[in-house]
Amino acid sequence: MSIHSNGLGKGHPLGTTPRYCSIADWCTISGMSRSGTYEALGRGDLRAIKLGVRTLVDVEHGLACLASLPAAKITTSRSRRTVATVTLVRPSARPRSQLASPHPTRHRRASSVRSTADHIEETS
Image (cartoon, rainbow, N blue to C red; front, side, top):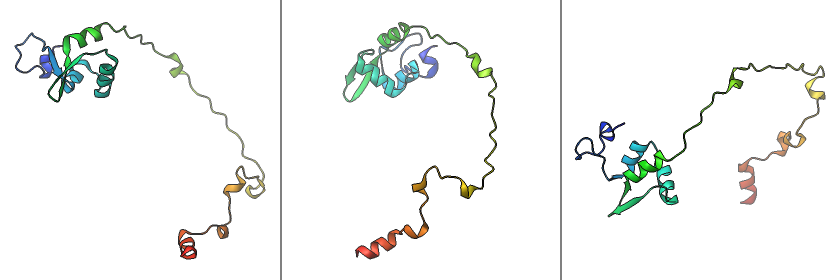
């Protein structure tokens, strides 16, 4: 992939790679995210210079770092082809009122719950 086909390196003759580029251009060239680029700069994996307030990435060094990374090992998973089995459980024959509540403290009577307005009136 030529970086010039993406509109990068404007002002450079075709066939040449710019020595330095902005962070935004580096993200387009490398496919790295902006935060990933700053993390790589912090670890020392990428080199950059400061030109005033702009940070410019050393393109040749960055491309060499990317080229030195190990190849990706991509495998397909056959487990996705298995069909999940579902076990149906028959509900209890007992009425709901006779079932024990799993969380007895969550079922409070409406009379024990006070509204915020009632609380404010009492404290005023």
